Length: 358
Image (tube, rainbow, N blue to C red):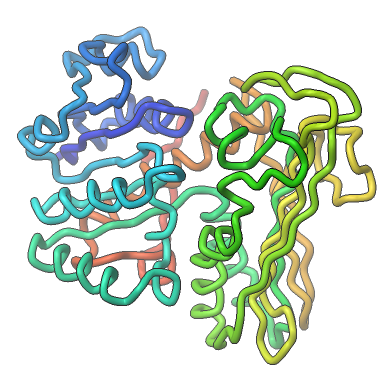
């Protein structure tokens, strides 16, 4: 029997997740919730960019989602700029006995030692009372820096450092809030966006650091962060808008999980808006962008992950991967014990039922 699912949020990740929910026979879509008034009343098929009519029309009312009585909600609403509201939304679903998988809020990917314990305990209690579970994931933070490094680490005899990298040109990423407000592209150098406010990097990727540490069985003493910005040599346009000369056009940052003064776990991002910027920074393994997992140990590894798509570039492919990771986890999350679930305690999601000859 198909799993009854509802969907919240039809942005970059959400639209592609919605596509899979409509086309995959494992799921029965029963409700769609949006934040844009212009999308209210539109058929889910239209919102997903499909030439099908599902009979499910979009609402902006979470009560309507609850009334549809789904077994699981796919939550892809914006979480970067509204984390408390996103957590409250998820808690509301859990309290109603509805499982949640999604891309936000990222802090719930692995909240231990990142969020205050009282808030984690409150969510866990809510989930237990509702008999529901929650799993937040994506690419990065997500499978590129938890599932994949864990798989590689499981073959090692000794590990000195795990480093996970995203190296990408974001010029084609069409998300103005993320690009300008969160990451600070197009802003004057030194004007700190949301992501570069003191401590925010350590929170945003602290979930990844703490989860990797838990899987490796080590205690992180401290999490440090650092960043560099590079100005645009001239004005140019990207998918999200205009980048003025002298404003931020490339960003590199590191978050380090320190153990005994040694950077045991490192998350590194190199984000450019043009490939010619800062050639001395790390370069992707394929044109446009890639992910990389490096393990220093015995044996050591350097593994490049190069997403591609028949329907778009590297950025589109990465978003498809995030959506796929979320949607494919639904059966495991529905079957999981109540509470906040992570890559460490969910079974391996293998892509069962996805094969197609063309």
